[in-house]
Length: 524
Image 1 (tube, rainbow, N blue to C red):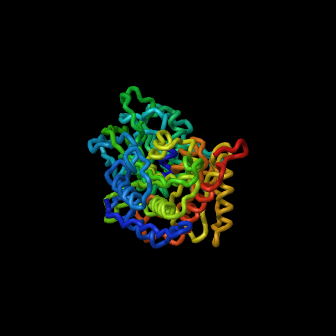
Image 2 (image 1 turned 135 degrees about the horizontal axis):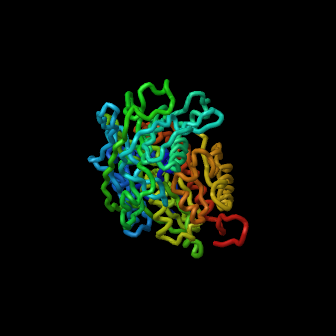
Image 3 (image 1 turned 90 degrees about the vertical axis):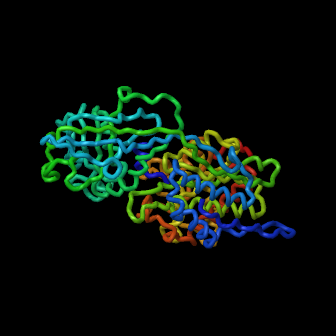
């Protein structure tokens, strides 16, 4: 699942042998549902260290795509990409160069260098449609404490503070007096976004957000991604520095005796200008074209009229790659989204082995979800089947943790125009018929929920095209986007139950004579 800070601020291993087909004597074929042993075997390979975290824009994501394509080939799925099972996704990769420098000129005349990468990283883009920020600054420093304007706390950290044309530094940390709820809000990714949005209108030359408190973990999670960003391929001319209206934006982590923070802070929180006189920064970056790959396969339906329509099952094959340089630096992404990818693989096996449903199955493993939902954005803009032939999209992302029976479903209330409400009713009916139903948590199913889960995985791009969607997830946990998200922490029995549930929802939709649409003219 894509990290909220990315959405708020910026927007092969040896393959295990394919499951053999079940013998088909006279009568209907019966497929075994996804099982814990099958899922454990495949996830141990898919989230192994040899995959190096499956980061999009590196050979490691293609290694993961090859793994999936090899498996669905042995299962007998029909290739449905633009090149066999692969759909090529053209992207642009921007990498921060080692020659980039960030320095603070002190009042003594000394220059202190802040290492780019380990301690500070630039935001090379601020989201789709936003102008590009500048990549250089030579400006006086101004310190805005916590960057907070909050009447309940009696704070306005910008009062009488002129930041125009200056490099403004803000601590992303809860200010004194904040209660536990406020503390969480100030130090969460939304708090980072709020500070940035507030200060951009003040026309600074540069913005430096120093992640402190619980925000230190956020820096560890996103810094490597920000050093290597992907965007949709754009062959237009790159604007010069003078043509960029937004300031340089830097994200730093709090370190002892940082030259970005005045001496004596936080005991002295008066606005301070002269602990250091200038921020001098120049970010250099290279841009090249890369091709990523979605993996796409079909299991054909049996009904002559309905088999040209599809129930889509999706997951994302990428994760966040390497974090830092410690002894355990590989972010394996076992839950995010190894669990969804391997769950979808088991559903594909069951679909291929079982009696065909009336509609067809469409399986899409999307690339570059963590970089900005780019694989699903490309597929829905360049679908390999007509987009209006997809009657539903079932997205699985992080389905292997957090208790035996709990499950979040997003879509029925979040998607526009109630387009997913009938699909949600089908899922509720299927859940009620299970021998052991899930306890469905609907708290994430709101487009205004602070975690913005609806916007953070691939179902969003399908919903934006009018496709009814359901997003299945067992939720966030302390290992999210960390090297500790490893295969040994997965609850494989729960993962199997969720995968089987998604499969049975797909069967229920795929055998219906009508689409799961809000009340109105029925259509196949």
